[in-house]
Length: 286
View 1 (cartoon, rainbow, N blue to C red):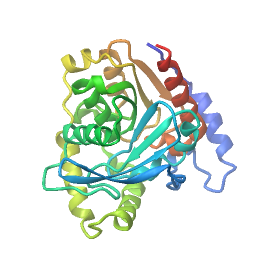
View 2 (cartoon, rainbow, N blue to C red):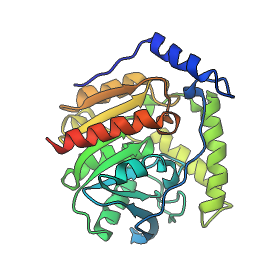
View 3 (cartoon, rainbow, N blue to C red):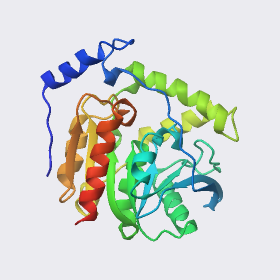
């Protein structure tokens, strides 16, 4: 298992360097702006499981699908798509009910959202793909690794939890409060039901309170090449749960990124992209 540990001194030095910035805050306490996606090769809506999934495709090569976190949308991957699209065909999608995608009356659930990913893959005629997931997207990636491993080449799971006990109280985090407020304005701008954010938020919170529930047996049977990844200052995910998952998945890699939080891919783009590209290149050689 690959582990990378960084000392408090390293994070302190990074924080001191950031003190020169106007905010005066360490990067793990900041929520950088939501980036924009570059121009897509192809984009549109796919009819999947009775809803319409918005997607966009960039670049050429082996397919890599990026799955965003709860309450967010595909735009959050705007800093990763250009780096990946130089080497891969990159597909982003808005999860059901998020961003530009619609939803129906079915309750939100990770298995259902995993089925949506497979449906989009079928629509785009992609037999197998690497999955990069953040938060809820990483949980969906794990669900796929458990139930549909034949559709995956590898998984980079950032900031996932295996069950609800692995989550901390996000209501106490100023960064997460800022994210939830931003998510509302983005939902109102992108969604076809812009006046239903509070209902949407309540239903997502219900899912967070009861799911996922990955068993030890399920984790033990994952055979897809996978890294379990998180930031060392994650506001939402308990470190012990991250380490537990990595210990239970055979041959899984464990990566703890220094001086970043649940929003690592926004806070330290160079570090996140370097780790991601290293994983994809390494896994492709296995």
